[in-house]
Image (cartoon, rainbow, N blue to C red; front, side, top):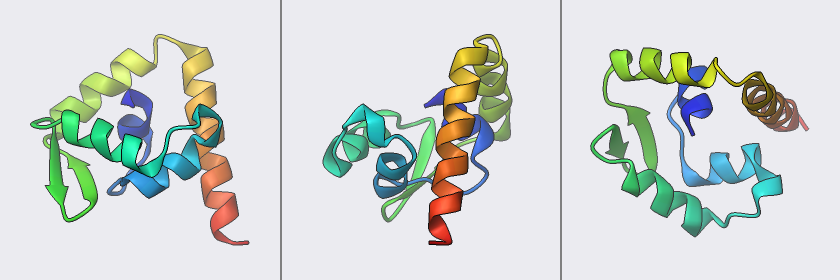
Length: 87
């Protein structure tokens, strides 16, 4: 989740997360519960969530940058997500 908020520069929702990480086999309802559990770090606007403060995003970027395998997984999922938007 840290990688998504560090690298994904738009509101996130459970549907997007299920499309970014299909190999996790987490339902949309499950992702929704994850997002709700991250309150108060996230601000909910309908079904979309944004990070509360830019400092939190910078902090998460620092954490995610320590594990290059995780960075690669997140980037790969985000790239696949964006490529599939055009299909």
